[in-house]
Image (cartoon, rainbow, N blue to C red; front, side, top):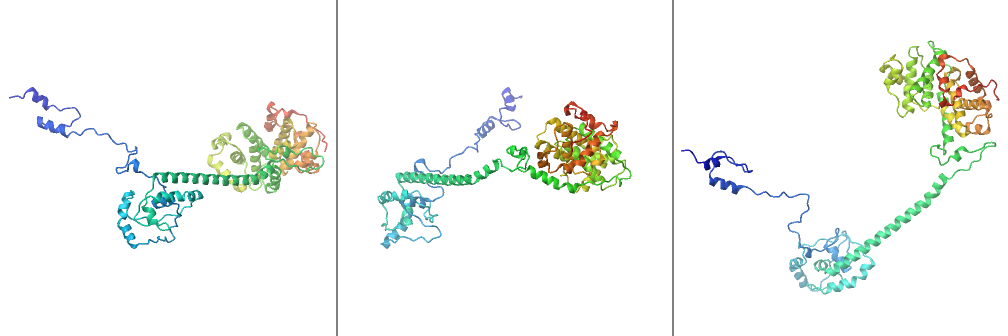
Length: 494
């Protein structure tokens, strides 16, 4: 006989979230399954703070110091100064011996009445300082404690056991809290006063020093010097007027370390013309990559320093110039060009390995010392000190940069050739000769730079060549005030 429809419906699995057993289920099984279903219990949020299971009621909670125990708190209420833990605690002398036994026997009952969990007494903590205000409240606290019944006759000296077993009234607890808060306030105000006094003493010592540093110095200048440039810009941090003179004196003292001799006789494969072509190409690279002028001067200096000690072939001369520019750009530029850029500017004549190897050789020759005094830095310093105009400074820069291609100027001191270029620019602009102001800031007289001025003037009068036209074309632009087109001087007023 086929089962009824009701039975067939019972055999179907129920999809109410209840797990149904396989096979035929009866009504009794269904009922037991429903009974076994666990109700949805809310998950406790562990992040929420909950109350302890055996926490005391709010009415019975007594606030006390976090660092002190009950003994210390009661000692404060009675106005008793507790001894330190290291010292031996003297017990109070109790007259009747029987009363001591009653104290021992009744200890547990008294502790329970005071809501103390342990029957053993804790040792006294570290003694705290009690101020005059606590001593004034001594009589009041003693009166309140005397009203409480106790099984032991009080002696003149306060006992630790007696004070630990006595009750604290609600009013005395409030008074202790108020006194403690006042003590903390007084200590905080006292600490603030000490800090303020220290700050005032420090400011009193440092203010004269700061005023002395910011104060413009009064220097005694030589006769004929018109102004003190460093004193005028004393508070300008970009001028570094506090020790600008010392910086350039130090650079002058380092010039002998990087002196260059006549090396062309040692270079069998090179000539002066080839060196001039190399410098002209380096100026073109500096203009193409928009490098700083200090980068160009440092690179030319590295080339000359390397050629004084190492014999170079004709094929590696351009490699030397590219490696020197690569080193100088990494020393002076904020974002130096990549190695691939220098390989590209050399038209693929050298590999990356050759360029890096030449870079290592140049750095070894100069002993990794790139703080070389440069004539361009001296020129800017001298022009600022005598307050020349920008066209005059640009003309001096043109004279100095044009002299880089002249082999006759490699043996001159950088500070002297900078002073000579500025003097020649003043002569070409008809702005006068060598003044005491120039002599004071440069440290040279006219006789010290006379020969260099003549060499620079002769280099400008030399016949113009198309192969060395980069510097002339550069300074013929309007950006550089077209200083290359200024007529030259045949005779100089020296």
